[in-house]
Length: 437
Image (cartoon, rainbow, N blue to C red; front, side, top):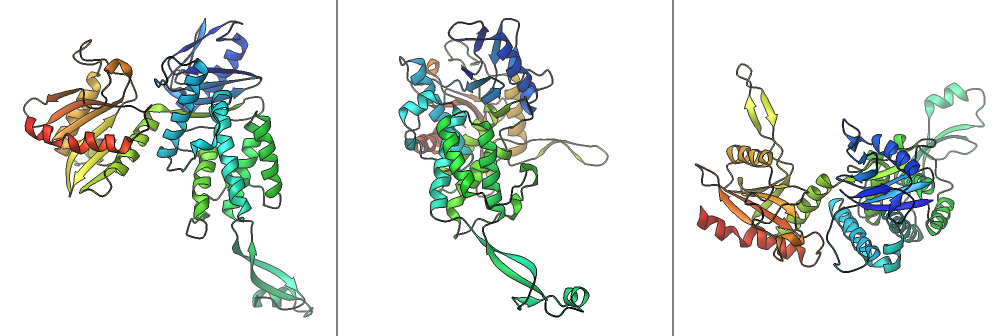
């Protein structure tokens, strides 16, 4: 299988040379990408299928079609001066870290060797982590629960089903219609794990992962096979007796029905595991901010607020509902509204407006009016062009209001002390904002 890697917003030129892609493979991958919900109205939301090249857009992940696969990595600046393989390895590690935070998963990135980060794709690394965690969990025992059973036995077991006894065995009292509970491993949780193993067995191209998945399939041989669309997710209850399965359930959901990704399939069509970076960045930052402010007098709401911009004149029905990415409150008062944007802004020396779109400013003006917060932040990913310092780059007062609108950045390539750095942005700068107000 031919494997290709490209970073978002970069191109793969058609051809047979290094860093190029065969045109017939590009056609297959573009056709698969067009079936994604992320493809958009014009069908180019994942890949732009040009006459001379294939260009990635703001969606990352894996596309695997017949005979080829394409890995799309986010545009994160890491390891300057290193080889492309080393840089891609570092980006994969940061992307999986972002997924782990956004999906509330505990993933040990140190369990994957440096060589694996360089040689394996994002999907194969995720499959490997899932297999290792699942193998460790089943060694400690598969979860079981009591299921209600009905059977006709010679001796009474459990309780007697009176109605069934006198309708089915009225003339044959040697059989008793029993209803009883039996401890079984055939649970909703185990069916989900089996479905994930089966799905990944059809998806993985790594011989090592295939071996791991065959061993796990043998473990789940006696569990009923259930199509992914028929899995009973709501029947799974995570409590103190099965807490170690929480992360595995989250990873299975990621592969089978995740919020960020879409998996497509079918004979000859291929598979896709895709993540929209705008959504992933928003959830990643939101969860980190919730952790950073834990234990303070501030509370965090993600996708909260939901106030309406307008109301109908006759019915008072709300129109144009708002959903700020992150609201920070002190008691019941909104003190800070944050909207995340996965795009690069310019240094102020190059552009006083930093490339911030007018639509984004209008959006924040609406939030200022509705939520009465004294502080508004447009938060972007940091990049070296902005200098060494992340966080606040510009502050502006909204005309006619005691409200500050600021542009800031966070370095997703730097995972060290990220909670401390966020606290400095959110709390350490409050005095500066108060002084400007």
